[in-house]
Length: 337
Ligand SMILES: [Zn+2]
Image 1 (tube, rainbow, N blue to C red):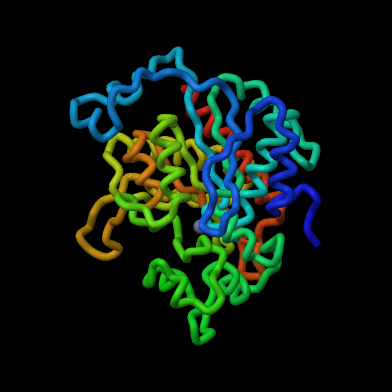
Image 2 (cartoon, rainbow, N blue to C red; image 1 turned 90 degrees about the vertical axis):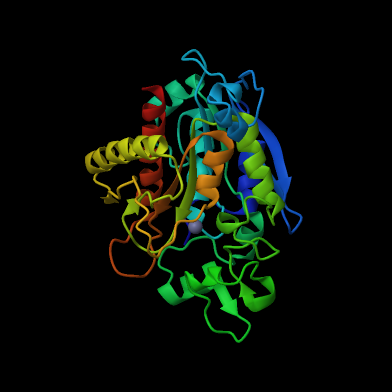
């Protein structure tokens, strides 16, 4: 039984796009499987006087050559769901966020005065589902009460011999398509896991399109919404970010910790200032850090609870949605400081 507010199907995402009046629906890319990826923008695009790409601007000594922003400019927020197409939590959260930005209420009828009243202080770029191929491959519409083995099957799929392709072994072959039996919802139809694409020569046009959007928009704050297992919501560590960015993400981590405590939602506070210890896991760039490096954006990954039939903490659909709205509100607050 899927709650009616839990809008994560591709058809439901399209219905949400059709209902947009305050924002503008834009086409971002066509997936490997030929599916359209769209997003909603709110607020005018401002001219930041771009003269160089971000990396060259930093090479010249200042990011202002890339984006010359003042306090008068509206912060640009980029919110991305469904990079792993089967991680429905972020998709459902973003469709509900669009509903809030349009009407002030989510699909449960719950009001969010703070988000609704402050939305016009931002330029918002909101992508419900970055990986529609993976979403189309998932035959169910909720992971709530799904047993762990089945969850692994849906997310990472199987190898050719039918054995489960578990995390993190699912990353040991990439693209994975030819090696897989059932291609999990992590991947696009070419078997690319966008989180671990080659960011200097992307395999997936979805990855190129998202990096291109970040490059063009110079977001101040970016979140990639993920989910996996039954754990407290948290921000995993991101490698290869400059110290100034890690320090700001640590400040946001502390802010989130306090906000989740107030909301009574279990949060794990993971230090965002990451040391390279010289040992495994060797630091590598992922999509989150790549977005920082093309745009200077503070960029982080959010990991949601999935409400699986697995040990506690097990969230309900309402708690999952609530946990995302706490995140969105805190992103607003942090960006207005
Ligand atoms: Zn994920």
